[in-house]
Length: 113
Image 1 (cartoon, rainbow, N blue to C red):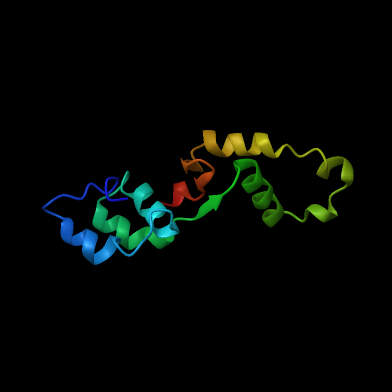
Image 2: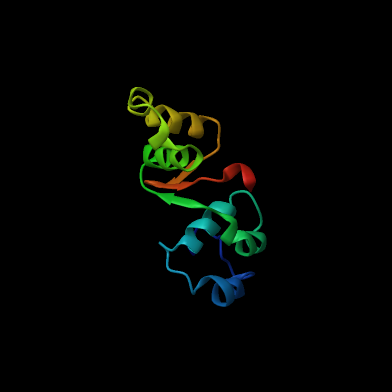
């Protein structure tokens, strides 16, 4: 995280005051590393809790998303058993609605940031 946040002599105080408390694999560290690609470090630190992460495959996320939006148990088996979560996942990624920041670590609210 030290390297990703471009810490230098001019801003090393940010490391000791704000960033040193997060382990490199924490939610906060991953969120900050993602956000500094699109905003200044100070703003990324403030907005780190706005980032929603999914750990796992994107197809699993697509399943969870569809399950949250629709009552799958009320769909006929013919439809429920033929939902292509891999295709839904691919569309989410192609539409920039999600982005992978590490292997199987996805930001799933890209369009909100």
